[in-house]
Image 1 (cartoon, rainbow over the protein chains, first blue to last red):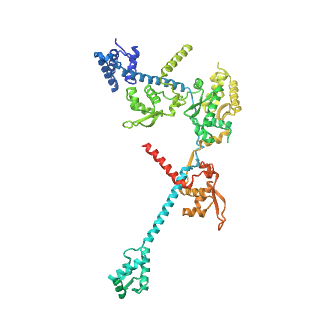
Image 2: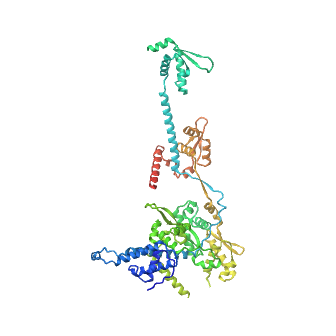
Image 3: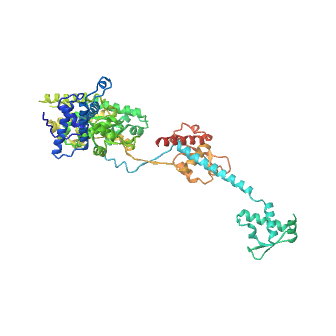
Length: 251
Length: 190
Length: 190
């Protein structure tokens, strides 16, 4: 039987196959594979003759059909036939075709719905530009955000307090006047004459300067050193008192 | 606090100016009322227009409500004017849309394996028409994009929500019924 | 010949689609009926929408009829259509508000000593936003103003009363809880 299909545009190889099966009045559950494969191939050849670009998927299905056909031609072995689990090589294809057919039906249903809905009209949105000029300012408040903000503040404050505490601790740990005096005395034993800045030991923090100066005053009071300053804000020269140095050395 | 009557009347005005489906939540927020109450009011209005046989009706789309014309009046509307109709969807677009509607969220790969053919272009077209959209990514290899239908899809096909789609098992019968009814009508007209 | 009911329903659909005032003559011609009858039908429809207190009404303009919104609903339409701009409180405003909320009634001096920074402007801003208010005067030197939170403050934060504020000792924990939940969500997203 020479089968002529009109050149509809098919939506894919399954679409074509379903068409062929239905046209041949075959049951989808019992596809006569030789017949349907022949028709399918004829159709594809026809398409190619007409120079219609066929998607690769049409060829893949053709190959699948031929594969199934050859499997069915193979003599079945007795053992397999007795098995309950014997699988018809067509079953996978049938399953796919049934699923596809279902969605084809859905497509038809949607088409109906679209048609029905096309009979209903809606109106466009009114020109709302008169309302959209000045937006309403709306204060967005959220309790969680509020708590978070406050917590952040509390944490920050706690941190500052901690830093402050550390700061005082460090201060207490800084050199005492007694230690400073001892240190200065040691320097004065090796160098009998020096400048105030030599006593700072490179640390020019306010604390160290004051500490050094106060210690120096103490040493003056103890008559351990003599101090000279030639001009206001000028260099302070310090000269160690011999006796005292010797005492220090002896100690 | 506004009375129910006032609120329902306001909902009608709001739907009218809005044109597009009006979100129940938006409407409820304007009166600071419960979503459920607002929904109830919309349903009551819908029922009123229907029972009075009005030429305008209210339809529900995805928790939104919209004024529209009574379907049976389309003939008279067309006599008055020819409203611009959108181009109908192609058969392939319908098939892809059908698969996405029932299997969403679904990947392109799944769609293609059901149809047995590539469908990049069709998907692109449906996205452009705003009938489908990306709804996430699959956890599978390559994390492919998952597609789902949009609100416009519901609107275009006159569905309240996606659950209103008939059971896929029944679809065959429904389509046959429609075809039979159509034939019936034609023979009556002759 | 169409029934009066059909014609009236069609008129409604036609007015709805037409948008602009629909000429009675045009409408009458579609049904091949008398101008007078058509006019009568439009007047009946107008009367129906009015007596039912609908949110959409029909107005007559020079022998034409048109759907429009009910004038008293203008306020609600405006609320629907006016875009909302969200504004948030600054961090300093939040801090001052928090101190007031927890220590009220409280003077500006106390707030400033807690924050270690002047806050005249912030307090002014909060008063303007009606989130805080003057609640009296302290008995201290100079009788400084005492501040407290307002009813709007409770409303905006969804609190029944000021006692519903989380315990200040718990604040650290609460924030940690929130952060943990947040992290949980993030890890789920990955």
